[in-house]
Every structure is written in structure tokens, then in C-alpha cells.
Amino acid sequence: MMAEGIEDAIDNALNTVVNTIDLSGNVKKELKKMIHETVSKLRTLFVELKKSIEDKTAENDNLQKGLGEVRAELEALKSTFGRGHVAPAMDGRRDQRTRGAAGPGEGPPSSIGRQNLYSKYSQARPRRNSS
Image (cartoon, rainbow, N blue to C red):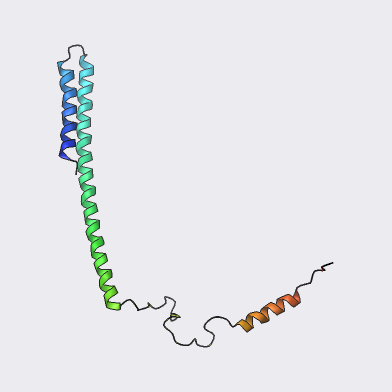
């Protein structure tokens, strides 16, 4: 919401412009009309700006309220499941931390398998002459 002091200062400044033009005898009629129209447009724009700020403030308040509700729901879920609970994996496999011993074909590959792969690779690769 636009502060009342700022709103009053803007209104006073626009009134000063209008009053100065009205009191001046040296300003042509067309110029006076144009200045009055411009001041009127500025007043309209300031009213629209004030409404926009009020709308955004209300929207922000609603979002903050919703955020508070989501946070409260999250805290309730945390307290329900506890800190030590691990959610199940999305692909249907059990999480490594929740399972006991790894089943057949599960877990990290054995180091023996890696040595075999390396030895096969190094034998098939042509050696460079170091001379």
C-alpha cells in the first residue's frame, strides 16, 4: 500500500502545477488545456499504481499464508515418519541403506571382475616400442 505521506506529496505537487498554470496569465489556452490533461492522466496513473501495489500485497499475503500451511504440513510429515526413515526408491528397488545383505547380482561389482576386464583389455591392445 502506498504510504499516505507519499500519496499526499504527489497530490500536492500536482495541485501546485495546476494552480500555477491557472494563475499565470502568460500561458496560452491550448498549453493550459494540455497541462490539465497531463495532470489528470498522472492522477489516474497514480491511482492505478496504488491499486496494483495493493493487489500485489494481497497476493503476496496469500502466498505467504499458503507457504506457512505447506511448511506446517511438512513438519507434521517429518514428525510422523521421523528423521531415520528412508523413502522407497521410485524405480521399485529397495534403497541400499534399508536393505541388509545385497542380493545376487546387486551391490557394487567385484574387484575380481574389474581385474579380469583390465587384463583382457591390456592383452588385446598392441604394445608400443619404448626404444
